[in-house]
Image 1 (cartoon, rainbow, N blue to C red):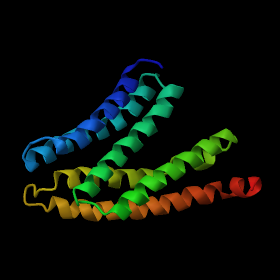
Image 2 (cartoon, rainbow, N blue to C red; image 1 turned 135 degrees about the vertical axis):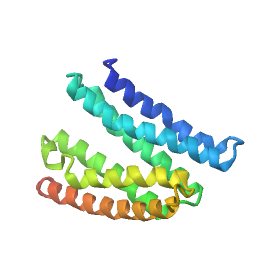
Image 3 (cartoon, one colour; image 1 turned 180 degrees about the horizontal axis):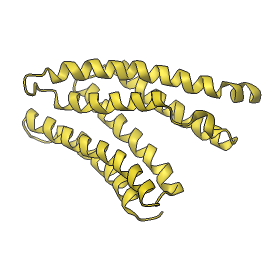
Image 4 (cartoon, helix red, strand yellow; image 1 turned 90 degrees about the horizontal axis):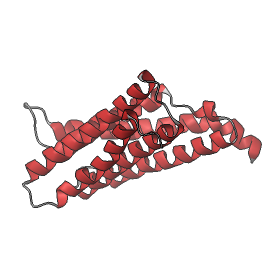
Length: 186
């Protein structure tokens, strides 16, 4: 494993996951729990952008980094969604849709790479749009309190439903792209 700044940022994202979840088990006021979890999630989300940017910019891309980065992303989102369901701030169906899609598409990408057809399921604009909706919705739902007069919880709820719709749409897109290979090998 190459030890470089991009990989360290990815590891930081993984290390922040227990903080996002664990803070809700500490004897703190709810507002403090929400603030700490939100800050940890936002920092983790920012490392997601920075690690890829820095890896390309510094010429420090690696196979290990390419493997670890999406794993860290999925762990971070899954942990936050499970916590949001536990807190009653997200519907279990939404968590299932988003987490299920991540597992399905990760497995599909692995299989497509194994057969030499990875380019057909490369990250699309639709996938990036889905991720953006998630990465905005989750901190809003973690924070949950009105902010500057804005109904943060309601905005987060609308965005997480949008993220779930985009999740299903993007899954359909990737499966459609992979279908010729699936059909040829069935």
